[in-house]
Image 1 (cartoon, rainbow, N blue to C red):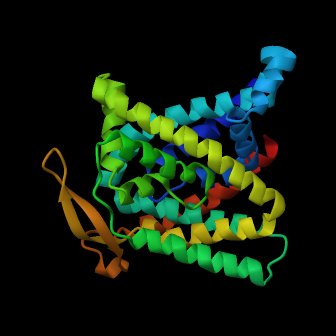
Image 2: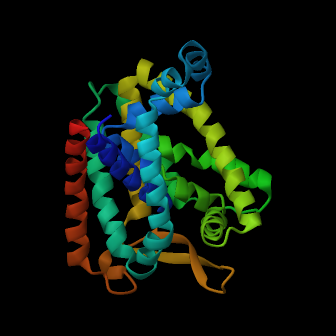
Amino acid sequence: MQNKERFTLALKGMAMGIAEVIPGVSGGTIAFITGIYERLLLSIKAVLGPGVLQAFREGGIPAAWKKIDGDFIVSLLMGMAVGVIVGVFGISHLLKHYPQLLWAFFFGLIIASAVYVGRQVGKWGPREIAALIVAAGLAFFYTIAAPAQGSEALWAVFLSGLVAISALMLPGVSGSFILVLLGMYALIINSVKQALSAFDTSSLLIVGTFAVGCLLGLATFSRVLTWTFKHYHNTTMAVLTGFMLGSLNKIWPWRQAVSWRTDSHGEQIAVMERSVWPSQFDGEPMVFFCIALMLIGFGLVFLLERLGRKA
């Protein structure tokens, strides 16, 4: 693999990492529109499957490395690690001070992504249309569902990782928002911050337990998705398109909080929100800038698609 390809993959991984930190935005969406989605699934399946051990016995480390597409996965993971750090420390600032502008950008990006994925359906029949409607309905429901009460118990942290990792592989489904619904978002984000900045032992334990849950989820769900892509390609694409369309409600730029909670610092955090028109927004709607950022997000998808074809 050439250095240029490694750099391009790292950039895509960074974009995925940033997306995974933002509730409502899916890293799987970024993987899909950059053309690495199915390759990522196959690599995850190989890393966490028995085939890599057989390859190692037959040809040593070089054979095992080739089996898991090692250069690809390492370049992507390095970019994702940087993206997560940028997201945890940088995107949180934008969400706090310029939320509607950030949401507007991602709203345009997800609309274009849904169009792009929908174009991958070879033939739209009754089954594909039904799959799209059901998936969109489920995604919309999860955007309005009431969050659960989180827990610091390690079993709860493990299960949250197991469930939330689906976002890495399902475009339109946000792992961060799943953590919000489970009531675990603040705990995981704060634990990551503490683990990175202060090497706090309890935080490291929580992050490690969460990571183990993610690994198990990857090992199982990657096989399910690989099988559906192989045997039900058009239906799977229709489902992914539905997930993206249904999730748009979560990233609508103009929302009003309907319930709140108090975090560990005594600050009020919105728990549930509802979408409103810009004229009903409690604050400066910044309609012009939001529309401009929607268009930028929309156009970025086709730029990422072009990069995906070149890589």
